[in-house]
Amino acid sequence: MTLYLQAHLRHGKDFELKVNHELPLEGVTALFGRSGCGKTTLLRIIAGLERPKGAVVRFGGQHWQRGRQFLPLHKRRIGLVFQEHSLLPHLSARENLLYGYQRTPPEQRRLHPDEVTAMLGIEHLLDRRIDQLSGGQRQRFSLGRALLISPQLLLLDEPMAALDTQTKREIMPFLARMAAESGVPIVMVSHSPDEVTRLADRVVFMQNGQIQNVETLREALARPDSPLFDDAGAASVLEGTLDEAGEDNARPFGPPEARLWLTSSALAAGMNRTRISILARDVSLSLVDPQHISIQNHLPVTIERIDPPRDNRCVVACRTADGQLLLAEITARAVQQLGLATGKQVYALIKSVALLA
Image (cartoon, rainbow, N blue to C red):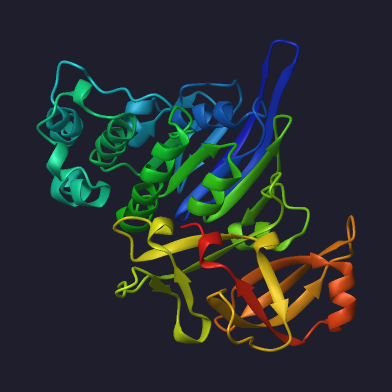
């Protein structure tokens, strides 16, 4: 499935949007960039809330806008979730959830309410009033309501922007599970590198009203100048399966040949298949597998490249045994002393407390 967009739009003297791209839609596509770069405007054009003259919007083989042809939002079968929830306060949580589902023709329904409530972890909240729900719970009901109209496409406009940090961490696993299990392609607006690396499969980088680049998440994280690296520096995202915890509450992540141990505080509730984020500065390298140290995670890796030093620090890109990219940031002096080079096999050492799921 693809989404073709051609649009030219001006807002006042200071903003101009100009795009002409065909975007593959599979999983979660993130529109990423600084505030004011045109992300939300582009999302509104996709939804039919903005109607630039001469624009072309084509979803799959269906034109939503071309010339005089224009399909309004309610005929595009789009689910739309904004920063602030739009639940109806006079209805219960259950009634809000089923609002669109009951108005969707039975032959178009692809998801059952029981599936969605389990997916979003809201079964125990169905009989509450809206004012009895937390901000994160309300947003989960907004997501569920949007899914239950069985949309062809789900549009999320910074769905976590109004939530505090702790609530974001609580809702993120449910968003990831929804994206993985619903089968509905998602376009998400975000200016948060953390949200993008945890949720997106593909990233559309935007700047000054234009699409600069479209990359898979792996491609975006593989380059040292990635816009996804914020003040914390370069980072890696590994995908894998969480197994059951032992008596020490640590849970193994990934295959035996690339096993990591996660602390219970890092775990995403209810998730088996998940992603973990690792800052490059939290990864050390060793020529041997060290014994009798407190660092629990020792991964055998192969060096793929060593970036030129910046401020006497080098980012070393390594491949794990299961083929994933892991970045380590060490000093240029350490690179020289250890004799590190492309193709060399080393061990990556990572503290369990540094892993974020």
